[in-house]
Length: 388
Ligand code: UD1
Ligand code: UDP
Image 1 (cartoon, rainbow, N blue to C red):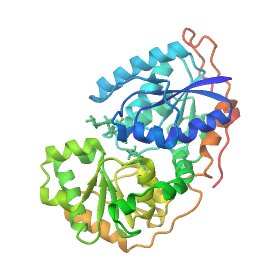
Image 2 (tube, protein in one colour):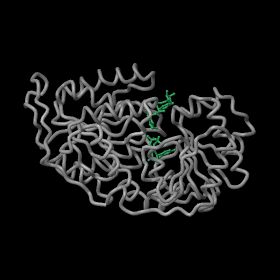
Image 3 (cartoon, rainbow, N blue to C red):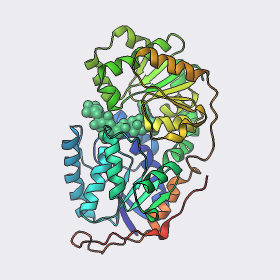
Image 4 (cartoon, protein in one colour):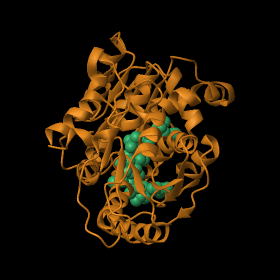
């Protein structure tokens, strides 16, 4: 049986691994789950394992929070020890967090092949730590699982050999399909918050570019508070943003108009997304989930990695320059009638495509991965893609 190590650490990675880990098991691959501990509050981590039936990680490295260099460095050191212990045939990393880059670097330095789920996403903004993490991980990876046609194109534009790229669709789409009915059946969040379907705005906020700039953070909250006079605005708050609110000294009168909640579990979040009139967010995952559930989205940034979601007016970029711009952009979006397309995020079996490719993959490396210098031969025998 092939043994791989999957590295997770942050909230969206738990959602992605929920569908990929079970597909790996079905494909006969032994998946050793390593949690870096980047996210550690129960609402940011444990709740997802409980709700989504993700197996308990075999290793929790307990790295916690810190500056980028310190946090990533501590992760690399701890992951390296685990990899030397397990000696897996492959390391699987997800997305674009510091846990992703640390996993990819630790594996590559030990000459262990790396595969990357959600490869090829680009904002073309090198100020974003996530952009650095994605670019480096993609260039380290041996197998790149690209969710969309644009992601494939981005990788090819950077000279990554086509034989390493597999277009699979988006695993978050699989998760949305798998858990939507359960959310409808068990979540009481609408009743608890006394919200009516299609009569509220759901917002999330956690990007450094918004939270670390007090004037931008004030602009977003002032815009949302303005809209809250028209319809309820619900905001499950990321812990990073809660700390940033205190620093930015946002007026109590502004905060009181918004229904601010603790971070939600995936099922309550899915329920709120599905029934929202509109979603305003700077999250990558939440932007896509808005699309999966055919809910209009406003992205509170000047660019997005999920370019295809902009088509048909489904997602609109609003740069939070001040409160009026935020409120005006969202009101404009509320007036639109977006057209959602099927299939741009795959066929709902992305995790199965990934698991099958991993189970079929033959390493081009020597068996003694930790001492030999490998020849980096791309294995293009496994290329497959999901059609539109
Ligand atoms: C990280 C990822 C980001 C991803 C997001 C998902 C990086 C560089 N960023 O951002 O790409 O979109 O996760 O949510 O990897 N904190 C807590 N409790 C927790 C976790 C964090 O209080 O359980 C607080 C700490 O003050 C911490 C801050 O949030 O310093 C930021 O956490 P961190 O994991 O560094 O980055 P995120 O903003 O969560
Ligand atoms: N999410 C959640 N509860 C929340 C906020 C987000 O379950 O309170 C889920 C959301 O549905 C999506 C994932 O977390 O599946 C996205 O994570 P986040 O926005 O933190 O990160 P990003 O996708 O921007 O990297």
